[in-house]
Length: 280
Length: 315
Image (tube, rainbow over all chains, first blue to last red):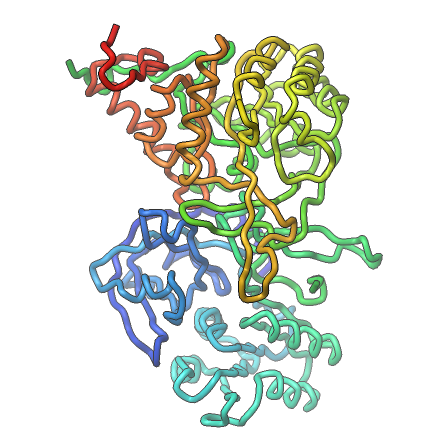
């Protein structure tokens, strides 16, 4: 999908105040908002994100990035999935159908999902990191993917697990781990991953999204098992389109200690090759 | 007393450059235009001040580099850029396809760096003016002194002046007790105009980890929260010098921009709001047109510097 990735960097970015068509509460404080934005519904690729603004008042001032969870091309809607836990997300969750959200997108480098990447596709999701994978699962389904597609999904507990049925419907084999053992096995998503990689799967390619400590653990495990691995980074962002240079990530450019450069998580990411990311 | 919108010409002359309207986008908030060109036609802008460009590439500061504050943000990017040669060969050709003016923001650590950049960019097609960035607060080397000592400001501006035929516009720092001697030093050194303000030095602390929010400890504060300070400094500078002033600082709406014009700015730069509302410069341009038309003015220059004290008669 490198061709599509290149095209994504030059393609149109849309910016508009748009109407919320529908909202769903999936579990606890986890919500799904469907916003009317036909251009993004048609052009968003798996792993891309949108930047959302909720207030004119300057509070909160900056936009926040949200993965495109899935799209409905016929209805022209884009779904974002989030947990209402902070100042920003609580403001979004108070919005009802008919209210507005200001949306900018689609943004960022998508997941490279082509068959050259690996023989088995493995999505590794931690908590709300699940948000970035449904579009990818459906994308593969639409292309009549013949490779096995798995989801390894870690969450706090049973009542924080969302969209499993949607993944199964897209032909994804799902395995769950919870901190308290209330669903799936007790433990972390990296426990699931270790068991999977120990079973010597043929040429797996990992796509991971979740909190940074989890991504780091996944990345180290992938290196240990020699598996190709892409990370979707959760990075503090300013503009989301590549101009503020605020979301710098350290990317390896050679073998020496000084062989690195700062790239932009919003443009050269959020999806990066785990082997090139330098963790500090 | 109203005019039709068509009766208004937004064109302005600034330091010998004809801008199609008085709204530019500020350096460091617009990259080299490529990203925003994916959103709208850059030919609609009065001008583009490109990201600070140095002689050699700069890697920039380690993250975290930005932090949101009340109605604004702190940044400590550290002038990450690919250097002037890359600008000329890779960034400028893209910008040349648009019918707008390109102002190159130049940065350096030493007087000779600025002079070298001025010489390198002199006569390069598609470059319309130089903005001398003597006021970035986020780099280590002692170049803060360029902005905090009028004699040093004079030296840098003079060195650039001697090496280029392009209009020279020093960008002033607000991190000084009195802006007027700096504005005066620029004029005396041969500047064609001045722009102000750059960011205000600030910081923020995470009380959970008890660490600074920025790896660089301090950063530059920008956004709507700095507008009153910027407006005051633009007013003071415009009173002090006869060269034109470009107003910068927290401009998010047409009303903000008009305030700067009334305070004495001939042009304005829209900065941090580009990160939040990428279409803001376009609504500001149209808002200025509406304001001029409905108040019977045919050009922005008719209102520049016309603010009065409460109770003061209009001449």
